[in-house]
Image 1 (tube, helix red, strand yellow):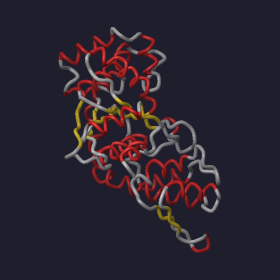
Image 2: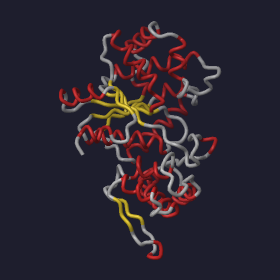
Image 3: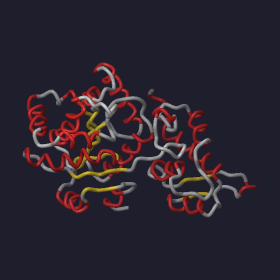
Image 4: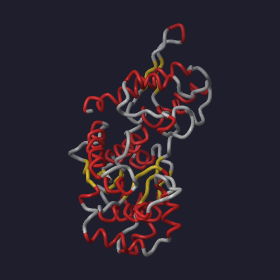
Amino acid sequence: MDKMELIKRNVQEVVTEEELESLLNEKEHPTAYVGYEPSGKIHMGHVLTVNKLLDLQNTGFEITVLLADLHAYMNQKGTMEEVREIADYNKRCFIALGLDPERTKFVYGTDFQLDPEYTLNVLKLTCTASLNRARRSMNEVGRKMDDPKVSQMVYPMMQAVDIAMLGIDVAVGGIDQRKIHMLAREGLPGLGYKAPLCIHIPILLGLDGTKMASSNDNYISIDDTADSISKKIKKAYCPAGVTEDNPVLQLFKYHIFPRYDEVIIYRSDKYGGEISFKDYQELESAFLNETLHPVDLKNCAAQYVNDILEPVREVL
C-alpha cells in the first residue's frame, strides 16, 4: 500500500486530494493533528481517529495531539480541574493504543491558548464570521445547542486558530468537524496563515445500529471489561447477509483490519472449521454470501477488539 492509499484508507473525505499530493511531494515530514476535547469516556470513535494518526505516522507525518482542556471547559464539560484530570487520562489511553510518545507531540490547550497572540488571532477571526456561521459549525459537536453559551460561539474560532498556532499542515477529525475545518480554511489566510488540508473520517454507528450515544449505552468504551465487550458485541445488530450499516462489520473494517494482516475465525469442524481472511473485502463477501454466520463474526470481533484494548486496560 503506497502513501496515498494508506492515508486515504477508511477516510470519508480529503479536502483536497490535489493539495495532499502536493504536500507529500514538497515535505518529507508534514504535520497533522487531532484535537480531543477531554470529556467522558474514550470509546471506539476516538480509537478510529487514533488509527488514522497511526496511518499518517507510518507515512512520515509528525503528529500532534491537542488535549483541548480549555475547549472542553467552554463547551460545559466540567471545571478546569476536572477537565485537566480527564485530559491526563486521555493521554495515557492514546499512548496505550499505539501512539509512540517519542514521536507524538501531546499539547494541552492551556499551554498556548491563553497567550496574547493567540487571543488576538481569535478576536480577529470573530470579526470575519457571522453568528449563524459559528452556530452552524457547532451544531454537531456542541452540548445544549438549543440554548448555546457565548463561549460555544467562540469555540470554532479557537479551533481554527489552534491549527494556525500549532503550525499544522493537515487537520484530522470526524466528518462532524467539517464545518469548523471549512471555517478555518476560509478564515486563516486572512490572518496571514495557510489554509489547512483536512482529512475527515466517518462517524460509526452504535452497536444497536443507531447513532452512537452514551444515553443508549450502545458503544464500546476502552475501559470496558473483556466480558462486558463480549456481551455487548453478542447483542449487537448484525443480521445475516446484511453488510450495509452493520456495526459489527464496521469493527472489522475500521478497527481490526487496520491493525492485523490476517484475521482468523475459529469455528468447530461442524460449522466449517477455521477460516482466515487477508483483508476486509474477503470477510464482507463471505458474510454477504452467508458462508460466515453472525455468531462466528461476533465472537471473532470480540476477541480482536479485546486484544486491541488490553494494553489500555493495563495502564488504567
